[in-house]
Image 1 (tube, rainbow, N blue to C red):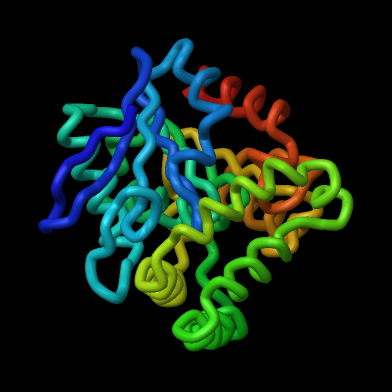
Image 2: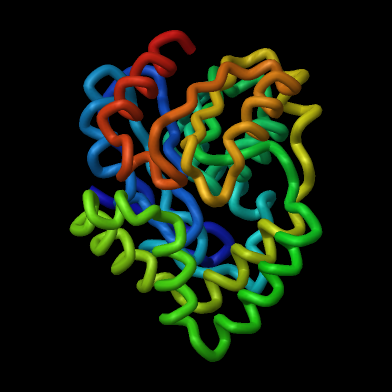
Length: 261
């Protein structure tokens, strides 16, 4: 059941299920809390699971024209404080991973573990920054086609056939994202800083989960990143959307990670 708080006059939607050590699940770009619908029931058997709709996604409002990682993390922090949670584990998918890192920087002593799911502690390359600027210009005039194209490009031909229904439902959720939310998140991601050193120096449990067919992140680069940041890494067989393409394996690995944190 979704609940909400008000943060800087914006509605922030969240859910809170289960008991035990808190696990905060942070979704990615063009997603919302529904991406965790198969994962929540499994993790909440032994843990308290919190999900938050990010600014400009799901049932949460937009808050300006740049949703920086700092601003995103402040909304997550507001929910955590509202729920009176002292320590927690973070799991962030893609954009959610960037936000998890930002939140962890502000509250390192409160973090029991951090999982980057199809995500990275690296900042954007110059090429990717240029791509985000171009995408934001396109979004103003041709948003629906832009979302369909970028979303479907996350999946290979085999995944498109195997997970046709799941991909269709996820795409419908993506299309509900307001244009302002799209642009603000892209700007925030473009401007975010590199977090390699912070992650390397952190003492909490660290896990990087990457798909060997991920079109967004090169998994060999993720292996190098894991070594540099002293993080455990697991390479999954799918692509960027592990919660769809390798769901059962992902649940198994997350349950194992949460248990050792």
